[in-house]
Length: 193
Image 1 (tube, rainbow, N blue to C red):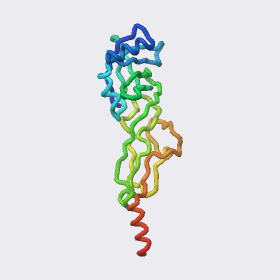
Image 2 (cartoon, helix red, strand yellow; image 1 turned 90 degrees about the vertical axis):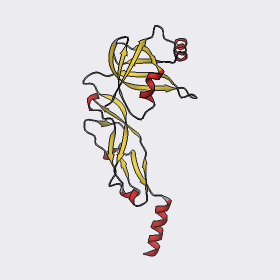
Image 3 (tube, helix red, strand yellow; image 1 turned 45 degrees about the vertical axis):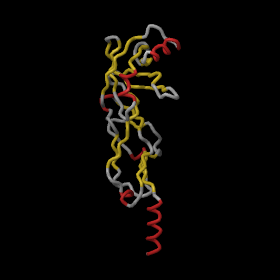
């Protein structure tokens, strides 16, 4: 899995006024959970953009006042109008401990249903998985070559090595939908037969 470096500074005081002042100075208030104690810190909003506004998922290498910590993003809060990041929660990652993250889904291949005029639809762009940090992939690749018209791939049909998928077994990940043109062609073929 890809890594991303972030430099942070511990916050002297916490609260609404402090957070508001940090945001005015183009810094984002953050909290690191999972260690011996929670660490409140802030980081530059510009520094975060490469990790937040992307489909990729990263393991974060935090440098908080010289202390190096490996973490994953647990939660992000955005401003409702400007879409600026207003707060981030990080979860410290320890060796041998499983973490839960959302990993992007990548479809690979040319589905049979698409060849017949259908349209491939990705219903779940990210899947929540649990696994050791060393086993987390950059993306979850799903082959769709055998997917026919009206058929779908469900969570229960997927299996990724050393990962546990945390969704319902009957949840649909991808499907080939019948388009109007394909329906019309099927009706026309039935009339001529």
